[in-house]
Structures are given as structure tokens and as C-alpha cells.
Amino acid sequence: MGRSRGGLTTKLHLLAEGRGLSLVKRLTPGQASDTRELVPLLDNVAVPRPGRAGPAAETARSSDG
Image 1: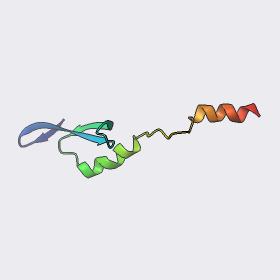
Image 2 (image 1 turned 180 degrees about the vertical axis):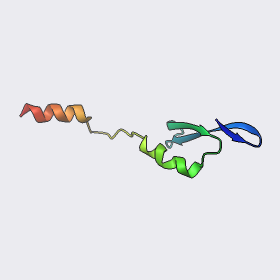
Image 3 (image 1 turned 90 degrees about the horizontal axis):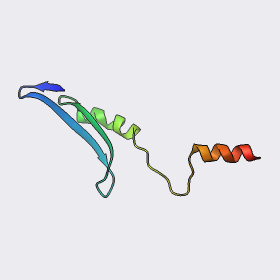
Image 4 (image 1 turned 120 degrees about the vertical axis):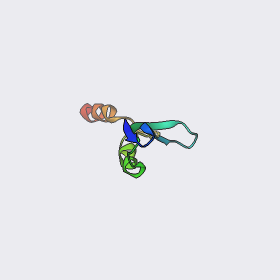
């Protein structure tokens, strides 16, 4: 919770994909800078890539041979 002349405030920082679906949300005190929240938001985005399996599948493949 942040404090301003108007009282206690908060901000909701949000990253959305092209259709408007939210990818990452972050709630901060009202006095938090919007620009300082960009990097933490981007660090928490996980975008699935078509045709790629996760690390578990790669580990299973490498242990077969």
C-alpha cells in the first residue's frame, strides 16, 4: 500500500498479449514508478513456443542414447 495526499493507494501493472489477455500482473504501492516495474514484468513472462518441448522432454531424449 502506498501513501499519497489522497490517502492510501495501489497500482496494478499488467502485461497483455495482442488479444488483451493478461500475461503477468503485479500489484505495487501507488508511488511506485511505472518504468521501474517494466523489467520485473518482462522477467516473469513465459511465452510457449510452438514445436518445442520443455526441459523434461529434452532430458528424457538425451538419456535414451
